[in-house]
Amino acid sequence: MSLARRRLSPEASRDMAIEAARALLLEHGPQALTLKAVAARIGRTHANVLHHFGSAEGLQRALMAHLADDIVGTIGAAVARAHASDHDPREVVELTFDAFDRGGAGALASWMILSGNRDALNPILEAIQRLVDQLIAAHHFDSAKLHEETLMLVLMALGDSLLGAPMANALGLERGMARAIATRLLAAARDELEKAGA
Image (cartoon, rainbow, N blue to C red):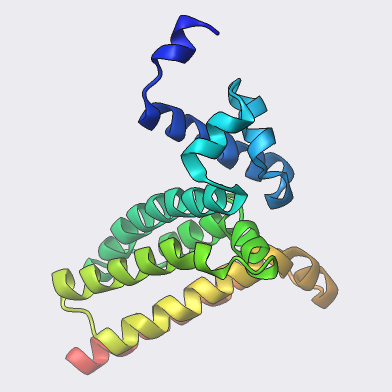
């Protein structure tokens, strides 16, 4: 065992495992998220990774919490910009869709649901709820409308991450069509709010 491995704090070791899990998720999909695979990736023992997470489900939950923090931080700033100015809502759509697709959150969430680990979704659901509450408080957004927009956007992004490419192909549409539709819907909702406020 190297000195560097022995000196790693528990927090640093846990963070390193989560980053390794994220890399495995993006490279090989959620089925690759095993304690053994993460341990091998970071040069630790299975027992060490087990100690930090308790189980593969615990690892998935920790990874989902990590992804949730990234997602809501990035999207929150974009939502605030989009609602506070003439900013194109396309940025919010792109960031949300990318988080679920390229960021791996869609595949991981689906894997958790299908494997019966629904509780592991709580970190992302709670993070989205906190974000919505913060946006309503900070910008005085219409609560009902923002809840509806968030539901629409998250469900579209999740669905697109799983079936977007084959569905668009089957219908003879461009791959980015779901993103374009989501952008139009957000823009229409913003226009409606502006008209109501005028």
